[in-house]
Amino acid sequence: MLERDYTPSFELPESETFLQDSSIELVRFRRLASPPQHALFDFDGTLSLIREGWIDIMVPMMLEALLPFARKGETEASLAILVRDFVAELTGKQTIYQMMRLAEEISSRGGRARTPQEYKDEYHERLMSRIAQRREGLRSGSIAPTDYLVPGSLDILKALKDRGVSIHIASGTDEAFVLEEASLLGLDTYAPASIHGAKADHRSFSKEMVIRAILKDNRIEGSRLVAFGDGYVEISDCAAVGGLAVAVASDEAGRSGRPDPWKRERLIRAGADIVIPDYREAAALVDHIWSAGGTGASP
Ligand SMILES: [Mg+2]
Image (cartoon, rainbow, N blue to C red; front, side, top):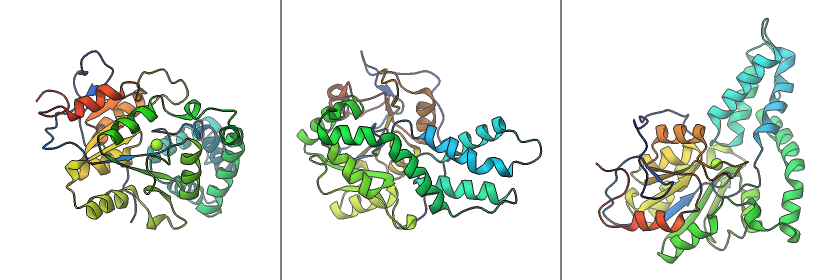
């Protein structure tokens, strides 16, 4: 199944409404007949910060590949903007889609592109050399998992688990790495049977497929699902089945506790019901979702 492109289908609210004394933004009112039974988390940027900074590896690599085929009038600076834009546009889908786009951009300029998989391998090699120290530090114990977790991640997972919610993780990163990095961060104890990532054949995985399987295997309605994510894919897929979509507009590099404005706007337009900067207010968020009557901004 192919992944959908980003299509902004929802309006931004005229003003921001927050849950009292919190930075939990209530975007849309949702009356939940019953609380969520299953929670789906995206991985990178939503729980894990191990791959923080990936865009600064991907964009220069793509620019290097594209620059020899610049059209008349295109400069390094203008191509850098072009690359950054399409990389951002496709963020949230599996990495291979960004590489497919790079190959198209090269071909459309008369260049002979390598295969998307070759570009992906090259990118991955560069990324791994950047994050090798982080992974090694986590493995040896010289780095604490909380150093590479979105703040409050363990609190939200624990709070959901305490309420009997089953936790699932789905990521556009290759599955073997998601499993490994989830275990380095101590997250595998929360989602022992349900961690999914990209497969060798990109058509055999999508977050939508994971969501459909959760609903079917557990015979539940979409309204019993809550999804947490910093990408449009999981937010729009969750909204499409009637689940509660919580946008995690994480500030990955700064961990400022303030929402990243680009992510916030993009995720509200994709269908987010609630926006949070991270999980520092996990208890208040879970209490709100579980409180009777509904969730979100007032109707
Ligand atoms: Mg993400």
